[in-house]
Amino acid sequence: EKDRRDLRYHDYFHIEPARKQLATGNLSWGVMNNLHFVLHKVPNDHPALQLLVQWAKAGGRDPAYASPACYLAWASEFAPNDPMVWGYGGVYFYNKGDKAMAGQWWRKALALNPNNADVHYNLGLLQFEQGNYAEARKHAEAAYAAGKYAEGARLFESINADDDYVEFLTLPAYRKID
Figure (cartoon, one colour):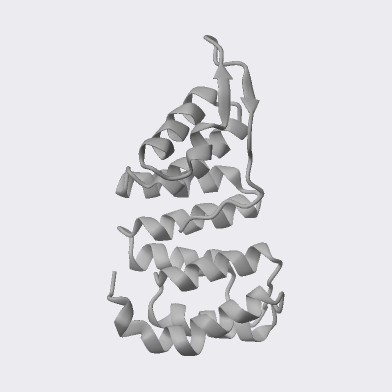
């Protein structure tokens, strides 16, 4: 990843204004205008991609710009070996209800960085929702072992020998990949 100091003006003039607008619930043209500026220059800019996913989840729409899926596809072509791009893509597709695509993006992220606790956590939740309890447990344990999202490992109080019973302890309302 390019040194963030080289992008300090992007952060100051585009990322921070977009973040502030989004935090106030303002989903107007300005958010996407700022994100487009940054993503046009650096398609895999992590803060911009994170805000793009949050903007889309909050209901942001702007027909003057490409869809978030297009920006994510562009980022994945520009930086195919950047696991964060694939992680953010998974969150975006999950939030859009395309769980199959989310799973594909998260698996690609793990292929690039098998120790990403956040992606293991998210993929574990997805597997749990789909009834794949053995896979869910594997990802929850990997997230726990990596030292993040300890609650991911506590998602399961018990799994019986047949892996057909799981008791939920917690399910966060928002999945976030840092």
